[in-house]
Structures are given as structure tokens and as C-alpha cells.
Length: 293
Image (cartoon, rainbow, N blue to C red; front, top):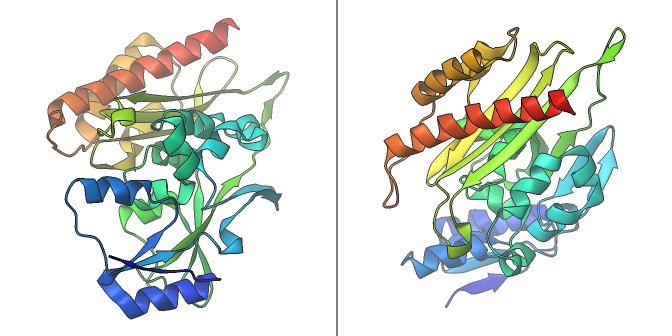
């Protein structure tokens, strides 16, 4: 049996983790840990329940950014009006995760902390920042840097995720016409049965009125893959007019760039092909729908 601890603030939680080392695990909703235990992973000697820490709760607008507490349930992320209005990709990603009973327990922080969560591609294309506590102070880093392992030397690996920060951006304007923002989130797989998703893909692009790509973010995940920004594929699209031919080229570049991991469900090659197809076809369809609206 694990001993359960209930710290009242982030500093106390970090002290407990430092004391117990590998035998101590942070826990919030506990859905991901439950899956690991059901698959035979050993239970740690100490569970550090972070649910009572005030800084990890709540959704608020602060300094032109939407701040989400790490303890925010996935079900709240799915229906919160602030998230739905400003970051519909995140709402759609939350909607795709498991069954309602799991979304009521599972949290945004837990989905991020497992490093393969279905929220992460959406957070990457939204340029999310993560606010951590290292036991002494708050440290901020981009979700992309954290996933790439390029975190600063000042934050230890046992830091506690407190909040997710999403910048609220004003829609820029061209002379006489607004830029067009298109975005999408797609998931292939059945997380409801606790099987890994085959592919999760997200994209967000800003286009000129003529359909030229001004800026774009592409991100992919799925299965055991740590979600990644597809920067080479993004570079292909910048400054180019949306067209079927460009989407064919995008398919080939994604096929080369995406780096899935092998598992017992599907092959790496199948994941590569599915990611490239979902991303290129989804981006083109979203563009066409927006252009005809």
C-alpha cells in the first residue's frame, strides 16, 4: 500500500518529492497512474496528492493570457466558455479523450505530465507556456522546449506543473480585409478503451486574403510518441499559396519528418502515413471550407 501525502502548497509538495525520490509520485486525478498499474507497473511507496494546492486551480484571464490551473479537469476544459471562444482546438482535444467519467477525474496537468497526452499537439500549436514551481520560485518555459528536453538548468526534473498559460492574440488585419485563421484537431484511435491513439494532429495557420500562408503551427502525436512540432513542414508552407500541389508536397515532408514510436498496436510506418494524410487532407479541407464560407 502506498502512503498518501497531502501538501498544502507547491514548496511542500517539492520537499516531499525530494525526500522520497523515485518512491514518490505526484498524483491529481490518478487516471494515468491507474492505467500503468493495471498494466503491471509497480506502485510507488508514496503518493503526493497535489489537489489541495490553490495555485493549481482555476481558469482566469491575466495580462492578455488565459491561465489554466493544472488541476483543471478535462471535462471543464471541454465546456469552459473562455477556452471554447479563444482556443477551440484545446476544447476539441479535451472532447476526444476517453469517456466522460475519465474526463471528470483526469486533469490538464496529468495529461501533460505523462508526455504523450492528447492535449499536447493542441497546446503546441497554441504556443502554450508551462508554469512550474521548482521548490523555491516559479519558472516558465514553452511546452515545446519542455517536450524537446531543452529546459533550463535552473528547473529540476521533479518540478511541479502549476499552470498552463495561453496568450490571447488579437486578429491582425490587412488593408481592406482580415487575415484568415484556420485551425483543426484530429484524432485517430480509441482512447475510450485505454488503447493508445494512432495519431493526434493539430494545425493553426494565418492566411492572407488570397490564401498565402503567413504563419503556421503543425504538431503531431499518438501512441507512445512524444508530440512534436513539425518545423520542417511549417517552413515548406510559409509564404506559399494554399493549393492541392502544395498539400502533396506537405504529405511527403511530413512523412519524412514525423518520428512515431513502435508499439503493439500499429507500425511506425502506418503512423507516419496516417499522420501525413490526416494533416495534409485536414489542412486543405479546413482551408476550402473557410474560403467558401
